[in-house]
Image (cartoon, rainbow, N blue to C red; front, side, top):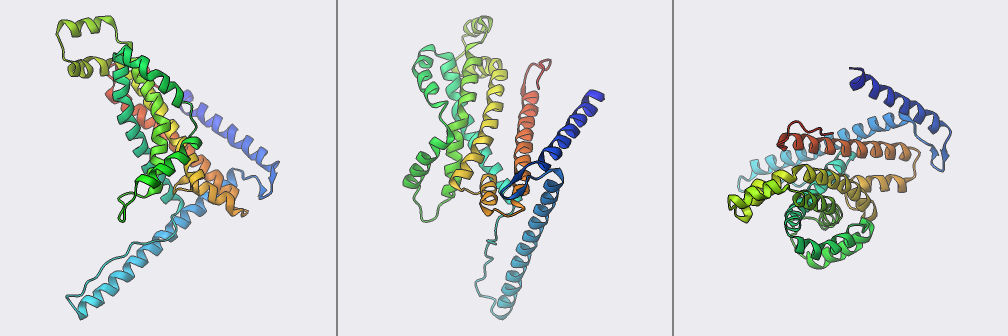
Length: 305
């Protein structure tokens, strides 16, 4: 009980106390650096702003419904429609946008990285051919990919009625390009490390390539594969925030940049709220992947943290 509850609580209290003391001694051009109390106050303000915006949206829809009802009462054949509310996105709207984008990019990266990782893990020749490309593109910063992705999306995605916004696709592909490498590399390592006994069993049973992959390769590589997936998801979340800040795409990154540009006395506190939320969401995403790994892993005695 002490290790589970008390030790983390003590660590949190020490951190909050150190943060409070340090914040009191840091003065910036926008005022004093926000401490825990100021951050809590701004979090309450952000919740209140969200509730006010949702109330405005409900009133907007209600006015349209009332107007349409009156119009239909006069003329039952009249055409009526409900326009979407176009108010300013709130902090929580930005969180939702970022989550949708990061999960879309992560899923796309996984769909690309896992099959390629399996192939190069099973085929040494293919590994020798693709490994230089992997090592070349793996260290590239998202800030370098973003301008290229933006130009390609703008050039190729031309439609009068687009299904997805260009800003969404730009962030999605940037996240995909930056986060697929850990999954690809760890999957390849896991597959190539299959024990010789399992390979011999597959040969004795004369399993087809697809059956060998499904029955032998994937189960044996699951621990390494999930290590890569957890690393990729963490990288995807970090890359997305940077991409949103630089490209001014909707999401938490844009919220942080807008508050920085705003320059009000409350901006630092609101930015700090966003920083803590970004960290908390990253932690929860990792915990979700850990739960998924525990539910899928065949080795129930393995220590997973």
